[in-house]
Amino acid sequence: MSKKKNEPISAEDLFKRLRSDTSLFILDVRNEEDYKSWRIEDIETPETLNVPYIDFIEVPEEALLKVPKDRKVVALCGKGGASDYVADILRKKGYNAVNVTGGMKAWGLVYSRATAWRGGSLKVMQFNRVGKGCLSYIIVSGSEAAVIDPARHIDHYLSFLEDEGLTLKYIFDTHLHADHISGAAALSTATGAGYHLSAGDMDGASAPYLALKDEQQFIIGSSSIQIVALSSPGHTPGSTCIMLDDKVLFTGDTLFISSMGRPDLGGQAAIWVKDLFRSISRLRKLPGKTLILPSHTKGGKDYDRNGVVSRSLDELRKSNPLMTVEDEEEFSGQVLKNLPEEPAAYQKMRKANLGLLEADEEKMEQWELGKNRCAIEQAKERI
Image (cartoon, rainbow, N blue to C red; front, side):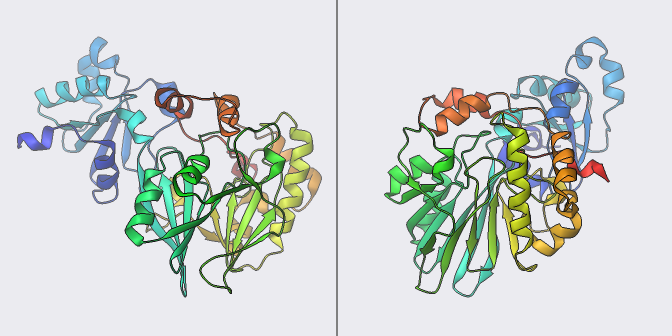
């Protein structure tokens, strides 16, 4: 075994290996609670074992027996320190083991991108903040572009725009985000493109924006290509889906692949869940071939073989449990009894996205740490 094989790998390297090497074995040495709360899930999640770091100190022989010696072991922890210690122990015992520098904290900053849809002169790029499950999009038409739900690391979008020679014409947030810091305002400042968001979510905001209205139309690339806003309250009062060329629907946090957006983060779940039902009823009436592109994913089975998160509306009518519930009372009951734990710092992130609270990079990383919690995660268990 060469020394190079034993050198630490970055979170980006791990992502690339996950997509190309099915023989990896992930050893997560965080405590059980942290592991269950947030772990790596990809197109084909490799075999993963959770053995807490402390076991390698207190009962080392017992811990070592749990780790296969004939696999490529990737050690992982919260920030990279504990797993580095464990990887070193494993190597001294003859294991093929490497550590992931920065751990899950670094994993939460990994981005990928893929073509989600093509149609004539139109192209949609899906940007995936893999560890966080945040999805954002760039619509390309000719030499013009629009960005939907950009994350705060705007260099990913700026680099793509520059490489493709594109002019950014519009920036949309489908709603006021509560699980991460939006990059929309910063991207608007950097490019001069207008930032569009429903006023229904921006009460008291100091951040500059352009009010997005139901059925408002935008032209991109040519006079025949339209972007249309469709009001879809429920997750938030101002939640808005974006329709592209009557073929692609960006559903924000209203509709996901296997769930829907939680209606409780504003403290008015009993009211907002009724709005969500009406919004989903509106979406049900769209053509079945409409391609659904959500703004969050849980990873795993959400991906297709190319790593894209998308489904036709017809597919979701069959596979998304809550899409099959057409009775409002039953729908509300299923949603309200299946609400997950609230994001730890969601009020701070809401205020930051309203322009009412400033934070440095370290603080924003701390707020965003962990998977997104904007979905009714347990809804699928109703059947």
